[in-house]
Image (cartoon, rainbow, N blue to C red):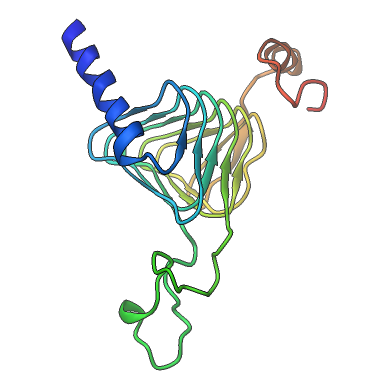
Length: 185
């Protein structure tokens, strides 16, 4: 088992230092198999990030510390192809990966704050914010901003409940993790 952990650490180091070297990825990064990460202008990933196998980041993102993605999670752009270009089939239209792309979606950042868990098979649309401490239920489609310390699920994702059952536990947690939301929620 120790040899497998060493192999995983070496693989993660190679991903960060070689394959994803143009991005800012902090310590504690771990990626499952067949993960792809791409952002046109910006990918910033905080400490202790886990991304499960077969997951994709295909948009500009800022991800906080202690975030985990289940398997088959996707962050995708909203305007990856210029689908309103008269006379040009969508398949042949300019796409956001093209250097000369000049349509919607440029500068759109997806923000995932600290301590977020995105469940298996969920899709997050570009340009939204998932608030600190939130949980996205498996199979959800996130199309709008998510409140901090809440649980969202469904297609489209809607708030199901708060993460903590009572305000005292929430405030204790916020204080212990030194959250920017301490005393504000």
